[in-house]
Length: 254
Image 1 (cartoon, rainbow, N blue to C red):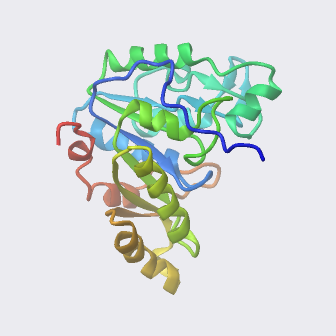
Image 2: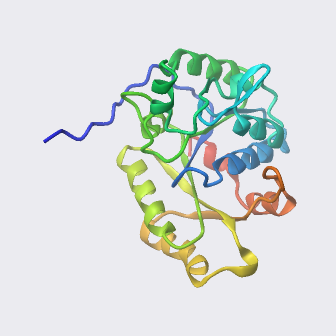
C-alpha cells in the first residue's frame, strides 16, 4: 500500500518579519481575493503601506503583456496596492487547475526563487504583508509542497474564508484543524457571501456552530460581492470588514 505523502517543513523562500496575515479558504471560489483586497484596503485607508501577495495563480488570462492574474488585478485595484501585477503574483499558469498540475501541463516547475524575489521587493517598501493562498490548504503547489506548507513556512496568522451555507461547518473545521495541526495560528474565520436578506436556518446558525466546535472566532460576516462582470468592494463589504482590528490580528508580537 502506498504511503500517504508527508508535508515538507522547508520552502526555498525567506521568512519575512513584517506583521501580516495569510488568507486561505475552505475551497476554491470562496472569495479569498475579495477579502484580501478588502483587508488591504482597510490598511491603506489608515496610511499603512501594504504588501499584498498572491504567490501562485492558475486560470490566468492571456493578454498582450502575457499571462495576467485577474485576482492580482482585483487586489491591486481594491486595496490600492502600488506594485506591478507580476510582483503581486509572480507565478501564473493558464489552466484553472491545482498549481502542481498546471505547471506540469505547461512543462515547467514552480519558480520559488521568483516568489522570494517578489516578496522581498514588496516587503522592502511595506509595513504589513498579506498573502493569499490558492484553493484550500491541501492544494499541491508543486511535487513536494502544499498551500499548508506555504502558510506554515511564512508563519503568519491565518484568516480562513468560508462560505455561509449548508456544509460549511465541516469544511471550515477541517481547514482550521489542518492549520493548527501544522502549527499555524488561526486568527479567525470570515464568513463570506452571506445572503442577509434570505438566510436559511443553516446560514443563520452556522457561525455560532463554527465558533463553538472550532474554538475559533468568526471575525465578521461579509455580504456577497456584487458586479455584473466582476466583484466589487461595495460599502457594505467595507462596513463588515471595518468591524475587525486587522492590525492587531496581524501583529506577531501579540
